[in-house]
Length: 165
Image 1 (cartoon, rainbow, N blue to C red):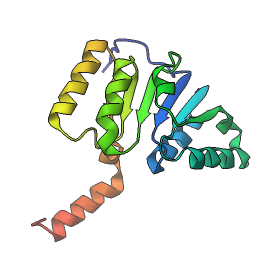
Image 2: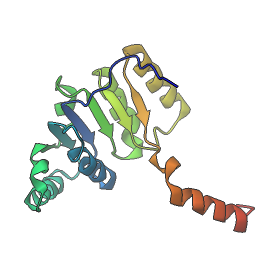
Image 3: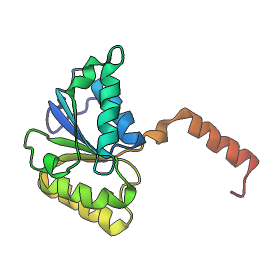
């Protein structure tokens, strides 16, 4: 089966990760290893800016940490919103902030990957999907655990031993 894509897929030269908690750091690690390499990764840490800068500094000091030289840290979402060289943003901050941050990113014509939960209401989800469609932007919700084998095993075990749950 041949799949025809509406546009050519290519790795962006710059991306942003909004939210630098556990998932933001995991995602940053993945992005620094991406091939072909992403030239610039901007981490937006509005709550833990200094800690995130220390984390990046420590990663650079580790053996093989040179790829972290492409990572910079800011405490301001506006730095992503105003940067026309960043076409893609990953939203990994607190779930209660997903809607507002994603909306602002889409308004600046960014493609957006939002970690789950996507948003807190159906109305918010519908508005963001419509906004992305109107702007021709890609909006993706992270569901990586849907393919995690250990969760499928856990689910099967729970159904077998806890049928009323």
